[in-house]
Amino acid sequence: MIDLRSDTVTKPTEAMRKAAYEAEVGDDVYGEDPTVNKLEETAAEMLGKEAALFVTSGTQGNQIAALTHCRPGDEVILEANAHIYLFEGAAISAFAGVQPRPIQGVRGAMDPQDVAAAIRTEDIHFPDTTMICFENTHNKAGGAILPLENMQEIYKLAKEKDIAVHLDGARLFNASVASGISLKEYASYTDTVQFCLSKGLGAPVGSIIAGSKPFIKKARKWRKRLGGGLRQAGVIAAPGLIALQENVERLADDHHNANYLAEGLANISGLVVENNVETNILLVNVEKAGFTSDSFLKELKNKGVLAVPFGPSTVRFVTNYGVTKDDIDQALLAVQQLVNEI
Image 1 (cartoon, rainbow, N blue to C red):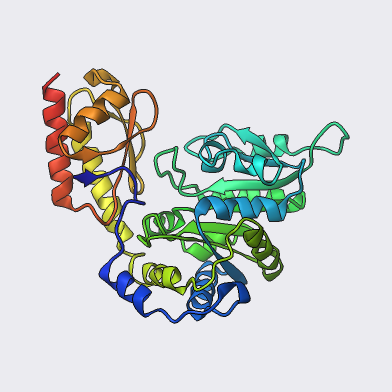
Image 2: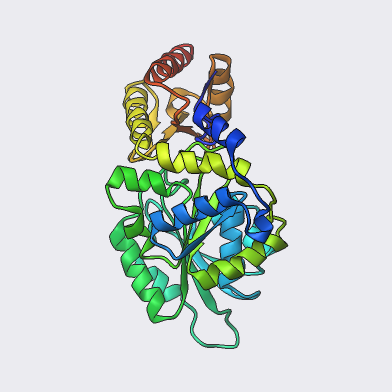
C-alpha cells in the first residue's frame, strides 16, 4: 500500500529506534531527563528562542500557547481555515475559554489591514484581543508557505497593541527548506512557536513549543495540568533529536516528489490540481473526472493507494520519507487506470 494520507504515517528510522533504546533517561517532571533536556535546548537554539518544552502533540502545544497567553473570555485572531480553528476539536474554547476570530485569508495569509480591523477596541461589550496566530506551512491551503513579509507586518501591528503572536509551525521546517528562509528568521516574528517532530521530520511522537523563559515556565505548568507531564520521556525524545539532526534537509526530497506527483496528476484528464505546490502537500479536484472525493478514494484504495478527503470533490495527497519516486510512479499509474475505468 502506498500511503499518501499524511506525513504522520511514517515509521521511525533504524537510527531513531536505536536512539530510543539507548536513551539516557530520568524523571522529566523533575527536569531530570537528560535526553529531553537536550532536545529542548537543541530546538530552542534552532529557533533562536530562550527556551523550549517537549509536548505530546502539536494540538497540545497550540493549546498550551492559548492557555498561557490568554485568559478566559479573551479573543484570538486566526486565519479562517487554520488548523487550530478547524481541526483541534474547538480545544482553545473548551480549555482556554477563548473566542476565535477567523479572518479569511489568501493561501493561508491574513491581510494585515483585516487583522488591524479585527483587533478589539476598549469597550465593555467586546472581548480583549490577546493573541494572533499564524500557520506556516498552511495545511488547508495545500502546504502554502506564509510570506515572511506578511508575518513581519502583522507582528509589528501586534507589538504596537501588546498582543502575543503564536506560530502554529507544525510544518515550519518544510517552509524553511523550501523557501531558504531560516527557522530563526521565521521565529523572530513570533513570541512563541510550535512545531511537530512527528510530521515531515518523521519522529514517532511529540512536538516542541518554544518562547521566552518566563513563557516556558508557565507553559510547563499548563502541560502538567493537561496531563502532559511525562516521566522517563527520553525514550520518545531521542527519536526527536535524530529527526532534527538527520531529517531536515531531506524534506526537499518530499517537496520534489510532491511536485512530480502534481505534474503527473495534472496530465490526467478530468483532474485539476487546486494549489500551487510549494512543499509536500497537493490538493486535487476530482469532480470533472466523475468522482466525489469519497468515491475516488474508495476505488483508489482498492488499487493500493491511500489519500484523504479535503472537501466534497477535493483529495489531499502528502508526500513523506516513506514514499519513493517509484511509489509516485505506481500511484500515478493507479490513478490513470481509475480514471480510464469511468
